[in-house]
Length: 491
Ligand code: LRH
Image (cartoon, rainbow, N blue to C red; front, side, top):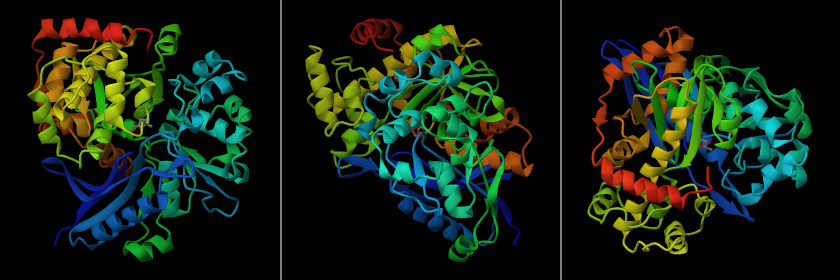
């Protein structure tokens, strides 16, 4: 048999994870899922954690399965995860506690506490990162203020993708994209910002070797080799931040586009060559995250499918097609929410939180499942318009199309409503953009691929995409006016 040269991508989101084999053939890029597993918040003792050991076990299972495939040769492995969370590592190299989840409320008020010591303006000028309670900067400062025992004993801090790469290789790195979204990187020097580290009582020595996407972390430890049946396969630091990996895989033929990476979060933005840090981006609270090939992702976090994921959990995980059909059958624009209202950050009952919001804002209260889902989708589409309008004035380039990528791009109804709301064509797919971006960086590292632009064209040719053209402009314009009133005073 001829062996297929495969790249093994580990892609972990806040609600699910998967491992994928990617390979280049004459037909373009082929992706095959190896295993898929849930990722859950664990609530105990008043806190929310992630089970990193369970995630590691699933990765080992995936590697074992891939090792047994007869025609597969694994060239390298790359890991990307959701942003901002990290593990404290002790002097003996062991993890000190399960990592806190960014949904843990302990960071409430964290930014303001930090800004009493360092002006908000300086923090934004250095990092260009959107201020959110859960940014690692504020998580770390919260642990410091609380004299958290794991924090006080920590010798090293490893972000999620780097921590998992460490479990596989024994090597500690700090990868640029994941450190950037943490709000610890200076957007211009592209290194950890010492003035911020100092305020946290840290130095560069508290972090692993600083690497950029495409650099090698190390090779599988003898322990992992024994468990999986693989050899000394290299682990590559891909774009460790899932959003950076996803945006690398936008199948755009030119650069006049905006993207919407649609998963638990909706990340909407444009690609820039240099950070866009000014009064306007600061006031609108836009972020400048470090991306691949020296690009900057000028974007905004929008609460995304989290709203629906949480409702679904209390609806016995009713299938998406069923919920979408129910929403489609309901009356339009009956009630709207601001998806980014703090009420929705981590409520114990999402359905109730949506009802409460509607009642507080003197609107009809959605009663049925379809009404709830319709309210979520219409509100998201209108929020996308609001953010895209802002982006138009901030973007260095014209925006001619919106690329929707990630799991949420499979939702035809929401894609159509998004097109209606934003008034430009929506191009949907690939739904596995994050995994594809992960594979792309590994292929670049291996020399199999030339650059991101040519890879994007290859994806465009090898993956079926769907285009949605705007309709019903008047109805959506009217709804948008209503939405703007509802969300006045929010950015
Ligand atoms: C999306 C994401 C996003 C972060 C959030 C914590 O998965 O990485 O970019 O802001 O998770």
